Image (cartoon, rainbow, N blue to C red; front, top):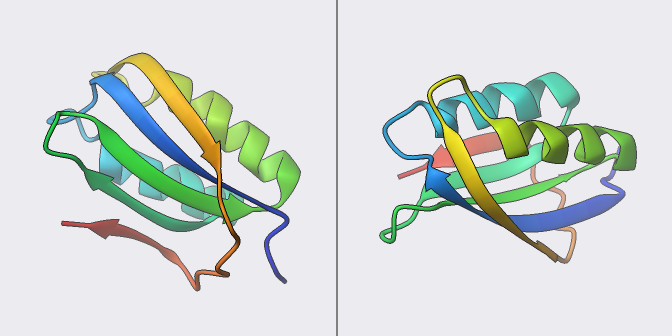
Length: 92
């Protein structure tokens, strides 16, 4: 099934060194979302996600909280062009 929605997120705050990327991958996979996550040099985390609208809304709400040791200050969200990724990956 193809994705209905895609967005790119830049997540800022205490989001590196707290298991954020691994938690994002786990949450995305549990919701049937594909895409990728990576750390950025400025200390933020970048996420590209695509999936069904309701799953994406759930995923975005989760991203605002993140894993227990994270502190999310801001999330910048931009729509993107659907690429139909086959899975969700952590990029290094």
